[in-house]
Length: 118
Image 1 (tube, one colour):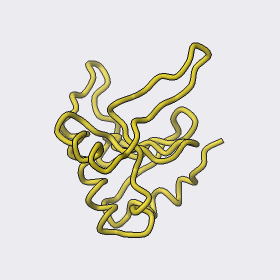
Image 2 (spheres, one colour; image 1 turned 90 degrees about the vertical axis):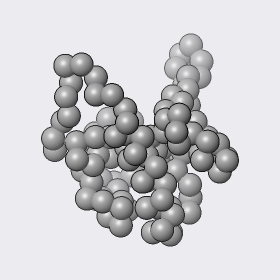
Image 3 (cartoon, helix red, strand yellow; image 1 turned 30 degrees about the horizontal axis):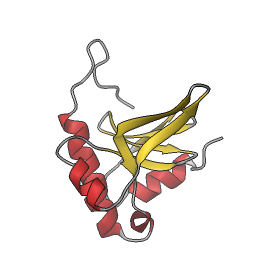
C-alpha cells in the first residue's frame, strides 16, 4: 500500500506546478506535462536527478533510492529522497522540485514511448 494519497500529492506540489498522479510500483509517479519528475513510494518521496543536479542532492545528503529484491538491494541513482523541508516550506519545495523537473526535461524520451498525457 502506498504511503501517500494522490490528492495529498497534488496539493503538496501545487506551489510548484499543476501535477497529475498515476499508480506505479508500490506508490505513485508524479507528473508535470506528461513527464514523471517524482516518485511517491512507501519508502518516501524521491525526486528525479541527473548529472547536472546530483551534486546539489549529494551536498544536501539526500539518499539515492534503494529497493530490495530477493537477490539483495538495488539502487536507482536517478532518484533521490526529497528533503523533509519540502513538506513545510513552499520555497524549498519549488527549489527541489524545480531541479527534478529540469532533470526530467533533459532525460531522453524512450523510443516508442513518447510523452504520456494524463
